[in-house]
Length: 351
Length: 79
Image (cartoon, rainbow over all chains, first blue to last red; front, side):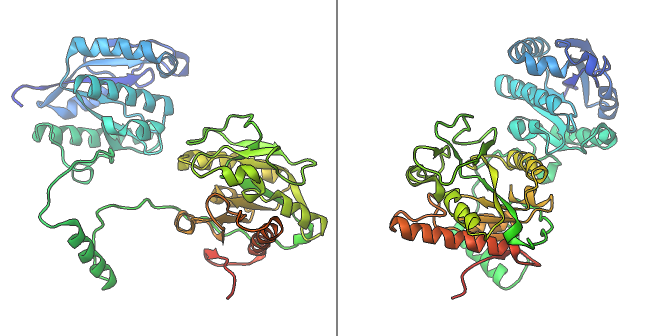
């Protein structure tokens, strides 16, 4: 690129040096040159690029006035016509991450302008908008600015050096965008797979073409000591809810869980309960919801004295397509309630 | 969800059909279920037999909750 890359920087009210939460409601405004962390970015970029303008918007204003903010910012971007947009870094600030991601979407989708940003991987803005920007991984708080800036600068310089044709996340230092690029390779897939399997069987080094997500492990809980005294709770991801799904738990990507009373309920029936889950054939669960949440058997065991008691509430959500992050957050709340209610063990059923 | 609840120290048993998912995600106590649309049931059986089957699975789950384990354990019937 012969001339200096013209960059617009998007910041929230805090990094834009306007104020804290008290100023989170300011509408988008345009400033000349770099502001706040933009100054450090600008200096580090040197001769190759310059931040010509900074757009600042309050995080609350943005998220509560989405359409107006998007329109106003698009107008500003059209006016400036930048070569690149830098957003944030947002660290783990949720509203800010979502704002950065939304602005990235405008730039990339509507204007074909590439975006470099920085974000903490668990910030919802990353999962929601990762295909629109090259997100550098940052720590979860602004204390991470001292590493975020150099990392973002490095990525921008790579971008300039390669004329905008950045390589893979590993090569360039950004987080996966979930963008699939087709390419031709010499060896066909079946042959590569067999070779990989042979390496694996012979305990040689091999590199997977598709990394599986890594799940953490939880410390094993102590076993129940006295079953006949124990209060046991039922929880399910199979979507069993009272008939009519009063809380409207979604059939897929549940945005909530339900807490339902089992007071006086000895058996779940077609009349009393149903499944809200859209990921399996509901016929059997609807005819007899005990097939997913075994209330009838638990009541028998309770009557016989095999267990102390069945907890008088059950918890349900729909596991279909529900994100790990959401499921975890529902379960954290559910667990708090269970512990507060003196529950001693849980049977969690999944379809 | 199983793991989040277990983090509080409550023993949890996962009664699940798709074992590879439960194992990979990392539930500690797992009891295999019958089928996805009816994990604790079998519509091909009579009502009485089905309830018997359900009870077997629940009893296995309760057994799992009382069992001291040192690693992820799938509780299957001894053949």
